[in-house]
Image (cartoon, rainbow, N blue to C red; front, side, top):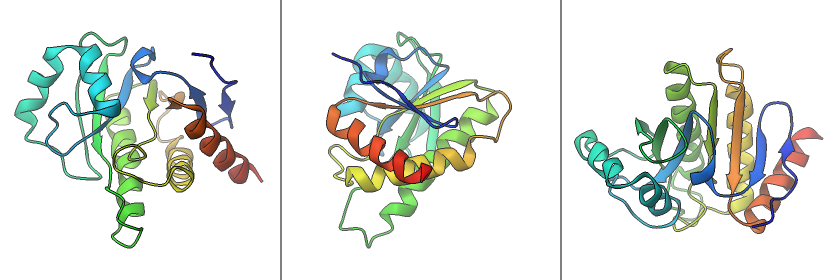
Length: 179
């Protein structure tokens, strides 16, 4: 896969690549509420982490949309996986924006509580959950930038975009935030 030139606004870096290959303290999993391995980003993370990840998720009792829970990373190149459940897009009038904002805030709070220095996010809820990419990118970058200085330790915050379309949505959102 050709990597696009990373975007960096001094708070958040946006890169194109595979989140399961990120060498960071924690990656964020766009999970389902049961925390049972699913498709998309969630399935990829579970496949690379190995069956131990599923076993670590079982006693957590699931996760509500907008919340986050943490497990070890097992066979991933990160120490931890932060699981968060995004909103299913229902047209925008069912509180989806607020739930998505909460996903980023809850994940960042866990990272800070555990003294992490680096974290990588996917484009939460933009796959099977159908959240419009441009809107999701704007929300993600606003939330991550607003929380970037919560901890002196957390110095590497990135969003990892699997494809060119998602990367372009984040590139556009970042350019609007810098205007």
